[in-house]
Length: 493
Ligand code: ADP
Image 1 (spheres, rainbow, N blue to C red):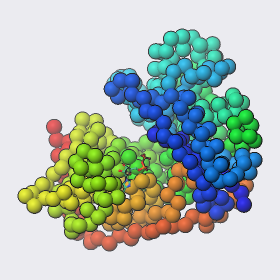
Image 2: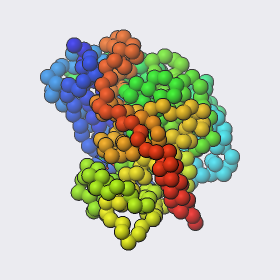
Image 3: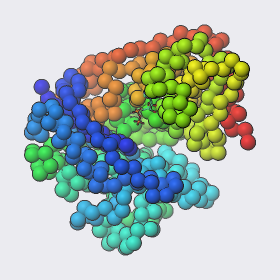
Image 4: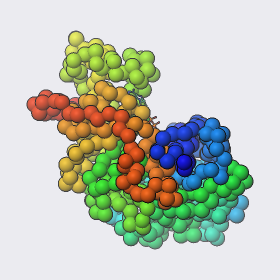
């Protein structure tokens, strides 16, 4: 038996999972870490916390699996994307806390970029819209605001990396300074067509080239962890951003394959093969995970509030006692009674991009009960995903055949059935729901030869349940019409 370790460094916790050759989970460990909010809208992570949790969970998972580091064939890293670290090339000491993807501190500068007409140039090179999420403006902020940082960067003393790069650098004691295509494609500095750091954008953001890591395919031998950490070195053979790792873990290897992750927000990704599809509907174009130096392109759409609306029902509205409870409540009524909830708590993401929109509950009557509200909230998640799918189908010119699902809220059978119904396509739930970690493990294991190729991996993938659409065309039409009207009300100023 071979063992492959996946390190999943997420936004709120770090996890290590050890998989066996069959893709089964042998052991796992998880640690949460601090979220730092220095000002309204600012989010930071302590680099020390991140490294402590990474080393901690790997050690713990090894102990739980009763394995030594020498018995691990390969390790893959997957991570929260875009979060930005800058540190000293000699000492490894970060110049400040990591700026997290959610942090809005550079929003005004991004608005100025748009006002100054840079949006099209940036989109054509990077596939992204100028937004504070992506790393470029975060690096600029650090160089402009941390004492002495710019001078040190210009002398070649400072390095930039997303979480994968920082962890690789630390775990190899500075021997590996690298990232992969998927993480590079989220920095807003990487040209996704030439597959190179873009010198014109580096000039625009005033970032020295010497700060940037080498870029490799996601499945690639990056080097080994220093033996001081786990007793023996572990070869790192895979690196990928979390959403692209999940797409790979769902075995979406062909053009047209789509997965949606139902977490706090929702992330819909479609593999578009070697074709970089330009979006006219508010999606971004980004790079997928693979093992060659010709990565596939991916269309990505996200909504900010997905499973979070269920947390709102539980914590603020207090009409359910747990997230799981939402399923039975929703099933206790035949339909939502005409109620729609558009959970635009922080504005609307793709395909609307309306930052000023706010959530609405519409269609309330004297007969509306908490069960109708719960059902409308779950249905609202499915409608949001439906809007993303519609945009993606228009952009790619591909009709969705099946939707691979994962994330915390995909455990909800009611939600998955309604999703299949409203999309009129199958929703397919895998048995191993940890698709992000699985994707990182697959990349590393394929590179190391633990698995021979994609076909062997596909054979490994066991399905938990396939949800088949079962709704009349008329009902679907009427419900979707109701949703579109509810969205309009959200936006009415
Ligand atoms: P993240 O990775 O974004 O933290 P997870 O994938 O862990 O998110 O999913 C957590 C989200 O899923 C929460 O917002 C929670 O409300 C929702 N959730 C979890 N279980 C259920 C369920 N059975 N029904 C509906 N929503 C659920």
